[in-house]
Image 1 (cartoon, chains in turn brown, green):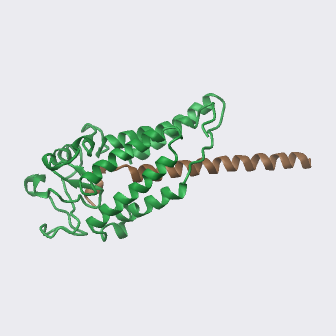
Image 2: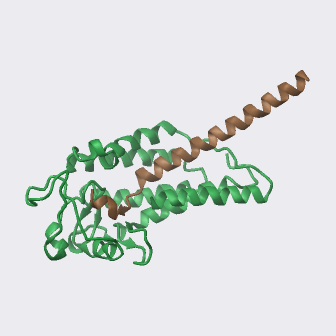
Image 3: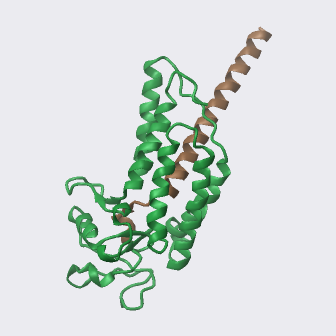
Amino acid sequence: MERSLNNLTCALSKVDRRHIQLILTVGTLILFVLGAGAPGSFGDFGN
Amino acid sequence: MVLIVAVLAGLIAGWVRAWLAGRSLQALTLRWVPLALLAYLPQYLAFGFPLTRRSISDNSAAGILVSSQVLLLGFAWANRRRPGFWLLGLGLLLNFTAILANGGLMPISPETISRLAEGAPGSVALSLAGTPSAPDAGRAGKVTPPGNDWATLHGERLGSSKDVLLPLDEMRLPLLADRFVFPAWVPVRVAFSLGDMLIAAGAFWLLFALGARESIA
């Protein structure tokens, strides 16, 4: 039982790390494209 | 918005790719992540955040854009071995080159503006940031060029955007400028550059690669 709990905790922590890493990667990529790109939206011109 | 769509499309494509193979999306560690945040934050204040973007002068905004993109070039170089980053970096370099060659802002021609306005609802209106010649300009003002003649606004930054209105004969490296627009029937009215297209492709490629079987780390 204890071993199963430990395995589950270990598995959950790995899943969390992967999800966090994925969120970090996508978030960083979004920052990059927003900073690197320079598309002119018509809405922007009016503000 | 257009580039965010490319990111979302790449994420979905990568997820579908992984799901079809019975896997999860890979976790990919990017290098120098704080540099991307450090680079983007000033741009957000200069072009995005409503409380600050109208109080920053055009020259300051141009300086912020150029220096910010230099940092992003460093970030792209640090991650050049990651899938898609050579495309991301090349797209950024093209945009940066056009921006640097035209005084620190992305040039856009009156012809492109006119094509952009074809499918835009309502009147063609433009707000100028701190232009004394336009009596209705200012933070709350919107002006319409006389007879919709955009030539009267040459050299002006367009609102609080990254764009500056320049005629083609005064524009340097016009092939790299914001010159592409979607057809009028497409509701998304945005002008984009060759660099933007490469950035979108690179973002899609990177996220699609997260669904690959082989490790990309």
